[in-house]
Image (cartoon, rainbow, N blue to C red):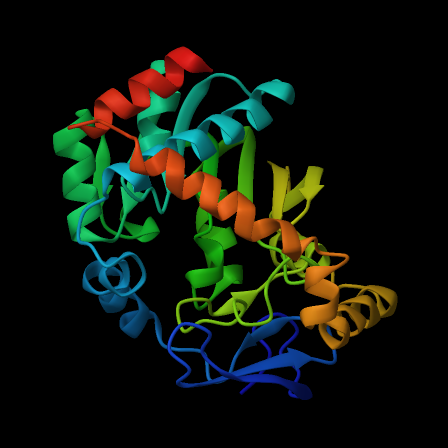
Length: 306
């Protein structure tokens, strides 16, 4: 296997276990560019079939969102909308890629965007159309055929076999001066439990430098927030670059160092993992008291509160 980013074949083994079910899963670190990825990378056909039918059952144990899932996704959507507002990205045609149950698409539509979504999972996309009456297509990014001012991808890029190809597709779907808002898990974070990092569903594991590199032919980074996740706002380049801009040796070494330090001590201390159980108990208590019969009522109440 060659690295999906730099095409070299010089890897270090990172993990051999899927955190969800303890099955065999080989994850490697590229010594050339710092990319962390599955080995081998599954085919596009395999991934498309998995996300169309099985993914939500495997990871959520349901074929449509439960009320607690809508509540969580709605609150996250408002955080992401605030991220865009704070950066004066507050209107225009918007496409949400990997739109899930449609919460972000619905809420942005209520707040002035002309929003639509694309979601491969049949159950979730059908739910979104029926529950919210929104323009949310069942399918893949390649099925979209119009142009947008803003494209968002939240926890979708890490599930895709070829991120370079994906950035090319995103570029072609974006108007001049368009904005791309990407959120992915941060492989360099200190607050991820050692037993909750590597999954079959996550094909790529991005650092800020590898995510910026993967986008570099087509997009320029203009803002970023780093914590347990990476949130990066890109703008479309006027001219496509001939080649990717790869991470520096210092950035590669930094990612290697971060991977080496991951463990229970760092997670519980520097990562503040000891605080997570009380927060989780509080979350479960709040969700146990939710008294809604429809997802749209959940989102409308979140919108009023925010």
